[in-house]
Image 1: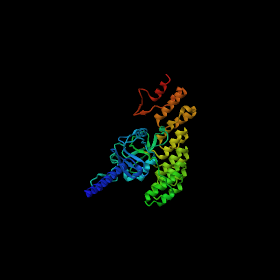
Image 2: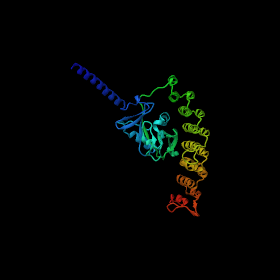
Image 3: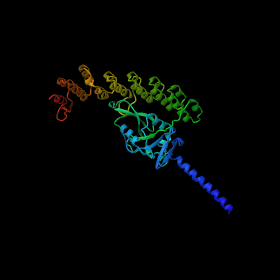
Image 4: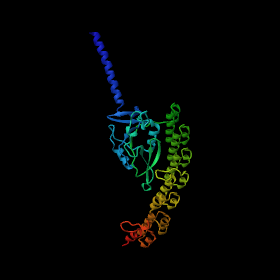
Length: 387
């Protein structure tokens, strides 16, 4: 009898321990990303990813979003039993893809052509519900919406920032940032054995101290370039961009510093060959256009190479009502695209209340016939404002 009691007690202790372990393990998967960095975990019925910073990432939201919609979608998101989500800034988004690449994009296909998933975290990554696929918005904005471009995003397979126009709908993934951010210093970085983690550590130290010399310690060239860009941005120093090897990143670095400082001379340093989502629209032209519109300086528009973009998106965005008649007419005279030129003269005629300016309008002719809108040629429509 005594022996049976002892055995029962031992079994009770063992079962209690197992229950405690199971409970502890369940608690471990209850949403504490600080203890599960680099792993996907399940909270309720939702799977999230905990990155190496301890940030919690949602799945890919269904559908495509404009940037403003993306910001609101994350703010309104309730997922994994929690709110408080936000659209990541471009630095956080880039870190997710660079530091945690295998967890957030498709790893590879198997022999049957099926995708393999690292930790099976986000099935929407390989089968995105957005028509724009693997392009993702960040909350980081670029310039004025009048300039046609509104923010930075990323293409997952390239894992480098891209500049997206404001009317583009792309994918969204939300982040819940860690309440306690890990602090890095050079001594800590030196002791790390894994080279990828060491490089990431140096990047964080350089970024926090705004010290580009620490970027030199990074082995991976892509991450080293990113380091120089981030320090250049925080210090608004285009000379640091010179150190970037990848031409696209270097041009984007110049672009960002030029627009931050409103200095078109920095645009001159851009290679000018890189195109941004439109045929024949270069990073250099975007740089000149943004500063010209922001400063309302049409002389900067003159530097733009692509004629249609120069006419429609630069000269056409000058506030003619704030200029003298001579200055306004000089801008219209430079425009080559005829309908835009006609509209320019029409605006001046209305602002100046001078219908004689309508005489400068030359009606467009297609197939030998003057084009009309609602039965009026451009010149006739201009005169209609004075009846």
